[in-house]
Length: 148
Image (spheres, rainbow, N blue to C red):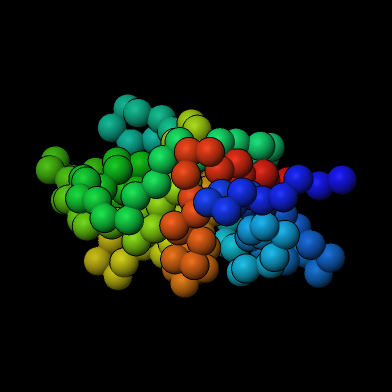
């Protein structure tokens, strides 16, 4: 017997369904198509980042919908570009809505046009902005995310 969903919680599931399309499921309802950032290992300035394919159950560790931070060095490595000596600070460069998972993985909306990131962060998930906006108020650090 399944447990009822708490009024201010949501269970997110990202999985492959019958037609081999990746979907974000919230409270057992299909919300949207999801783009998956490919697992990669990137190197720049003698630093290496490895982004593994995400699989399993995770607790949300935070969320943000209005942030100003320097663009991460790995973004430049992703495009085989040199890392600028002074990285630009861009409002919401990962996307307007960002759900943070352990080990620096995210569920994100699309990056803005002025961001050097094109598409999802490697190993992470890009979800249409309208779909994240619809569930945003219910996302808390009590939210569990299941990726299979």
